[in-house]
Image (tube, rainbow, N blue to C red):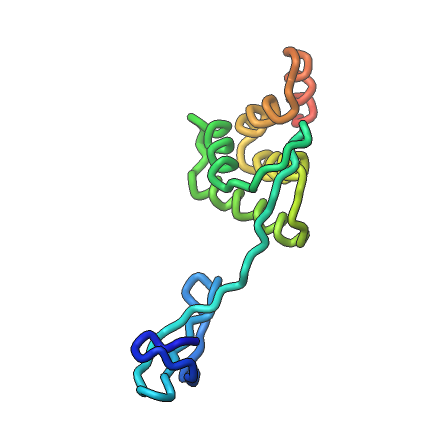
Length: 148
């Protein structure tokens, strides 16, 4: 670590503690040369996820895109935005737990549908109609019957 005051590369750690969000470690350091103190944060480097789409194209995972799709499905429903954000967090946690750099859109869709089903059945049906590409009212009716 380079001292921000004098540029010296030798320091000692005075204090370490987890950050408020528990995603990093906050460290107070003291430069050996100039004795000034400074703070650093240590983060786990997360794996950048890539999504394999149905057509075989690969694109980077986009949290905002997933959240936007869920908000559309839950529009005008009694679903809190915090619940949607929590669902996105849960999906991301499951994806990172797999420890793979590439996942299929199908896997994400299944995680989302399972979570939406517990949140709001109408939002679930809306999402399923797009995700499963319902062709006609019969497909829609079948999905509603499965909920019963």
